[in-house]
Image 1: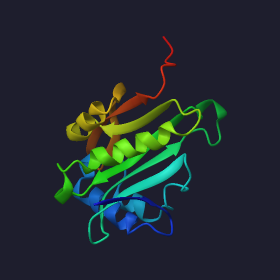
Image 2 (image 1 turned 180 degrees about the vertical axis):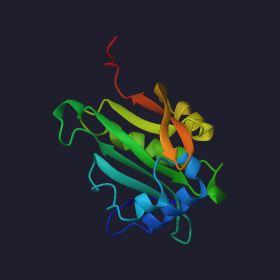
Image 3 (image 1 turned 60 degrees about the vertical axis):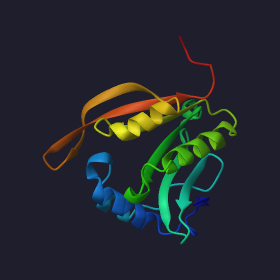
Length: 170
């Protein structure tokens, strides 16, 4: 396995990989396959906007995660960033790939000046993902009932945060 940074031009089939994951696990994602198909690549390939991929020995994606600093248009949000698009293919679950992707994301974000926290959104029923995030220090800070509606099915959503500094307000 090899960890790489993905870009819009060198993405190893990122979009199709993520769409396939959403198709298989619609109850674990906020978006639908159709939502993803026409979106541009999610990040800019900078220190505060990047996508990581884990490649197998055939250079096929096994897992992905993205990070984007918030506050592009709002200065008061620049102290935080959003982790999103986390997915590890079924045949690679339980091998620690998700942890590696998350740890590398956190390591990189810690190097970016003035980012104090990483936020993420996770569907409340995705207990496996929540446990992984909690093991790395993320804590739930909000719960929204019926946050997502897919046809006639509603999903609750939790917001989680990892504080990178001890500047938390009392």
